[in-house]
Image (cartoon, rainbow, N blue to C red; front, side, top):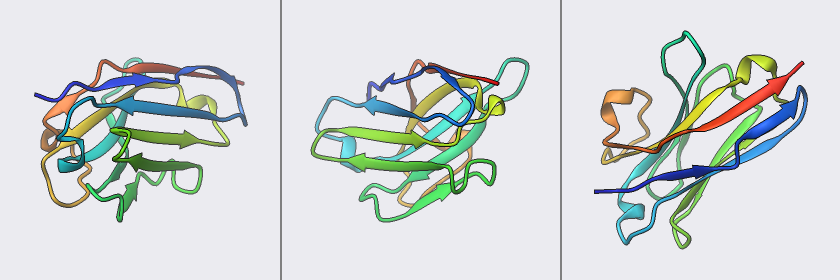
Length: 124
């Protein structure tokens, strides 16, 4: 069992930045690829970004490419999502997730564990 706890969400104006963190206490963090997903009201959950176990490879949704950066610190059992140039359409609940896959994966069914989510609201 992997427990994931997100933090760092909040309210920000368009053009601003936020950094989300996802902590995963335990010795097995580096055994999982990690991903970020988001879900806006009335919409399905969508992929945002993913990173391999070592952090050597990343994958982004086209909608966030060039604005968001995923990274991880295996020594701190934490994955991050740096979000810059935020837009109102980025408003959603953001979830981190852990996958036992050995490559970056973008489909939610390939993730085994999920956090509770953190709200990000971008005002225009």
